[in-house]
Image (cartoon, rainbow, N blue to C red):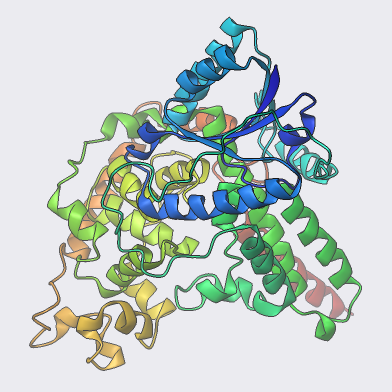
Length: 510
C-alpha cells in the first residue's frame, strides 16, 4: 500500500501540505490529461510554461529523494489501475478551483475514491473556502489562512519501490505548437522567486502608476501571476514575504525604502483580490458558461467561433491601433496588464456585441497565466453580465492617448503605422490617405457605443433586475463595499478630501 501525492496546479515542494502529510511509501504523481488540453481554454503556451515547471518540480523532488511519476491519460482510469496493481492507502492533493472540465474530473475521482474506500485528503491551496456559507467575514478568513505557518519541506520520505518516472513530453497532444508566443515568460520556481525579490528590491517602485499602461506594466508589475497559477510559488509564502517587507519598510524613512510603502500595500491588496475572485468560481462553477445575473443570461446571443468580428478582434485586426497593439502583444508574450485586459474584453462585448463566453475563451488561450477563477468572473464583470458592477465601456482612442501618448507601443506592435507621426498613430483613419496595409475601423465607435448603451439600459430595466442583482451581491460581492457601491476606493478618496477640507476650514475659524 502507498500514499499517492497527486500534483495538479501546485508544482513545488515548499509549503506543500499534501506532500508533507504522506506517511507510507510515497508515489508523487502528475497526470497529463489529453482531454483537458483539447479544451477550448487550453493552449500550447500554457503547456510550455507548465512543462518547464514540471521539470523544475522533478529536480526539487529528486533533492529530497523522491521521483516524479508522470503518466498520460484519464485520471480515474490511471488511479484505478494503480490501485489494482499497488494498492492506494490514501490520495493526497490540493483543492483545485479550475474550469468546469477539472470540476467534473474531480467529482469523478471523488466517486472512485468513495467506491474503492480510499480516503482523499485535499488541502487548501489559496485563501479560498470550500464550502463557503456566506461572504461575510471572508476577508478575515483570508488573512487567517495566509498567516498560518508555511509547511516545511518534508525530509526522509520513502519512495514506493520500482517506480518508473516516465517522460515529460514536449506536447500533451498532437497539435500545431506554434501559437505565436515569441517571447514567453520564463517558468520555474527560481524565476518566480527572483521576480518577487526584484519587485520588492526596486523594480516595483512605480507600481501604482506604471501598472496601467502596457508600455510600463511589464516592468512595473510583479509578473507573479503564472507562477501562482501553476503553483510553483505558494500564495501563502508570497503574502507572508510581502507583509514582512511592508513591516520592515514601515520602519525606514521614505527615502531609504527600495520601493514606496504604497506599492507594497497595493501588491498585498492584489494578492487578496486574486483569491477573492477565485472564490466566486469556487462558489458557483457554472460562471464559466452562465452569466451571474439571470437577465444577462437571458439576453445572451451566441457567437460562432468563426465569426469575422471575433476573429478580427482576436488577431488584432480591428482598425483601432491601440487595441490591436494590445492583442498582438498578448499573442506574442502571453501577458497583458489588467487595465488592458479589461479594455479588450469590454470592446469585444460592448463595441462588437460578441458573446462574452466566445471572446473569453479566446483570451483564456492567449493568457499564459490563465486562472479560471479570476478569468471568468472578470470576463463577466467587463461585459456587464454580473448585474452588480457598473458597466465600463472603454474608449480605445482615449485609452491610447492616455496610456501611449507618443504612440510608441502602437509603433512596436502595429508596424504598419510606425512610419506615421506619433500623433497620427492613434487615429489613422482620419488621414486623407490611410495606410493601405492597415484595416479601417471594423465598427463605428459612436454608433457601437450608442448600441451598447441601449442594450445595457434595456437589460437593467428588466423586471426584477434589482432583486436579482442583490442576490448576486450577497453570493459574490466584496464586503468592503456596499450593494450598488461600485467604486469604494473613489468614495473613500472623496470622504478623505471632504474631511481635509473641513479640517482646513476649522483651522481658519477664529
